[in-house]
Length: 480
Image (cartoon, rainbow, N blue to C red; front, top):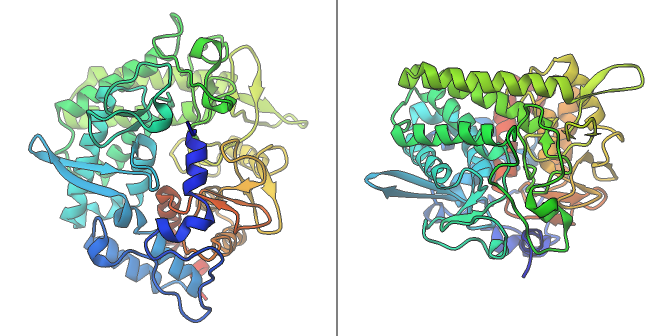
């Protein structure tokens, strides 16, 4: 049975790009230097249309001086809405299911990240508000079903994804895959908080949502593992060590220190050490957002205080145990630790990552600890930093050596105040699409025509978010 990675490679090669993305070019096709026809699906075949998004797209596109960059923005920014959204009704209320692109399942992480760039437009567009209400409800329903699962099926009675059907874990109908990743419970909180702040809409935050949030807090507490390993374990028959957990499915041994344990990274690869620093810092930020919402929306001071207490515990433990020192004594973040004093330094392109910490609200961009960490991430100190003829950037074990993720280039720009660095990222992003007009999962450092995943909505809309932000705050960087 093929693994998830093998399926992604199968469906993500340049050879099938044109088949997966409506209007996409065949391998090797390069757009004309004078004409860039849209790669979006025809209007009648788009899954969702927002008037506010279309207005934003046109306004921003008109401000981009580089015609290829403008074309890519036009393809990428609406890609989630064009191709991955399924609207429905469940129990008389809006329901929204968002697939990742080339897999017909919904990841809590990806679905939250894919729609995040549209949140600022929700107040002015009733259709978008319906989409967000439905997605917030669907995510809460998924969390109530199984807070340890990372992916879910459209039909709550469905069997898991094909590669997950032999997994040794407690699978339930409707669960697509059950890899425990801390960030799977953080992203829905980030989305809910952002939507509430942007729209002022309290409608989706009902008793079902509150129940799901109580499950989040309980699961985080459970995975501090202060009283044993807890109920979650996972093993998969595979020849890839990143696809399964050691020691009867509980992962590498740890000394509990107050941090939250994770089985897998945001890449869906197994953790080397189960105490993930960026994921724990993301949990701290998410718990504090949840406390704010609980006080304001539900007047539940008891639950808010419990969220803040856990956030304080996790933050203190991560700051105490999750740092390393360079040769000059300067501190920087580790990527994973085990509580025994062993620390791993690397970074992965998937967020939460060390690079993405300010983007996720875990720190400010000028935080000295973050700045030192960021410099090491974007250097040969990081074993998954690659520099080649086409670009330089961060990848990860998921697609192997030499493979740069465009998401890392976008994240570098999103966390930068340096105009030259941002321009360099824009140039790399523009020139490594292999003529497709879209972002990919990863490309070879020397040959962008060798890439994975022709249809990866998160990378597309993250790129769109970058361009929208630059148009609003640094328009001179988008000029001709």
